[in-house]
Amino acid sequence: MKGDPQYGRRYRSEIIKLYRPNDFQPGGENWITFAEFIKFYSSERYRDPHWLQYEQICHPCLVNYDFIGRLETLEEDTALLLKLTGLDERINIPKINQHTDPHEVLDYYSQVPPEYIIRIGEQYLNDFLMFGYEYLGSVKPLLNGTWPSNTANKTASANELID
Image 1 (tube, rainbow, N blue to C red):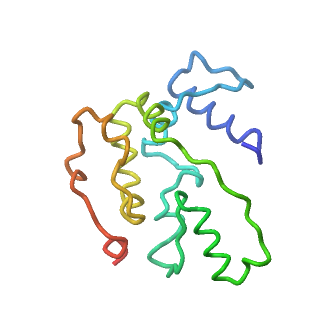
Image 2: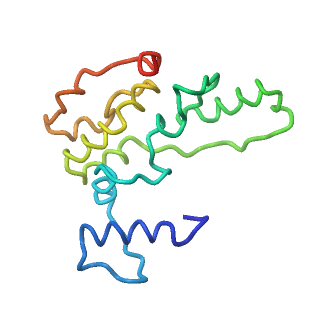
C-alpha cells in the first residue's frame, strides 16, 4: 500500500499467523492468497475501514445523497458531477481505462471455497441491494448448487432498505 508500507504487511502477517503459522516470517512479506484474504474478511471480526460495507461508512439513513457514482461508469459519472458543480471547465480528469475482466473475477474466486463466497456475499448483501447489483453476480456459477436459503430470492430497492 502506498501510504504506509507497514499497512499491508501488518494484515498479511495476521492472516498468515492465523491460517499458516508455520509459514510466518517475522519482518518478512508474508504473502497471502486471495482465498486466505476472503476467508479472513468473511469471518466476523474487526473490519478495516477499507473493506467496510458501504451502509456502515456512508450512512444512507442519515445522509440524503443526491449523487451516487458507480465504478462501472466512473468516467461518465465524473464528467456529470463536474458539470453539475460547474467545475467541468476548470478540472480535467484523465481517461479511465481500467476495469476488471469478468473472467479474471471468476479466476480469483474459483480459488475460494463456496462457503466463504456465500459468507462474504451475505455480509455485503445490503450493498448489493442498495446499488442495484445482482446478488453474488458473476461468481454464482462457482457455488456448485450451494445457495444461501435466506438470500436466494432477495431483491429490494435502496428505498426499501433505508425506510
